[in-house]
Image (cartoon, rainbow, N blue to C red):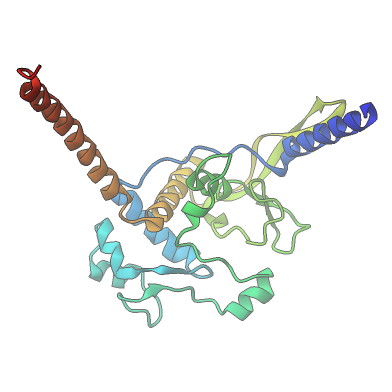
Length: 251
């Protein structure tokens, strides 16, 4: 029995060290931009230009983007490609068969991606914000890219021209008697069209748009919920005072 316990302790120690060694990293906190209309508009532009080539948002229509302050004419002029119409759903231009051949699987629909990726590390927005900022060059991978938040990812870095090329920097620490690699930061290999600060802000806009797209009415729901709670609080006080007034002469 004692030998079995020692084996289990060693196994869990190795597993913990393996996780600390770069197969997973802590998720960064995503900025909340679901109430920032200019940020959502910029996120919609980034989504249409960099994501919609391969990923669909089949449960979202272009004309719903009027909810974030865009006119239908702006949508037609800036976000529609090919023969798409403003009332159409946001479908990817790529052929599913080609996508499966190139990437090994058809890229997932992104309508609800921000709601479906939450986990013990944070919200779905936190995961996406971290994922889009932790790509690095890896010549051993078919796409030439890898990702710290999603090791062995099949998707190439669609935003690399904006971010440039980086490589992760690791240090070595002792964990349970083993040498373990620990992520320490990034080294910029080549500059992109944006500075690191601008790129982080752009990714925040894109993630904010993905959050909004997953539930366009979420801000309205929150506002209505606050007013409902205030009404119930006030009504509770009124009911309590009426009850006291009604029963004060009753023995």
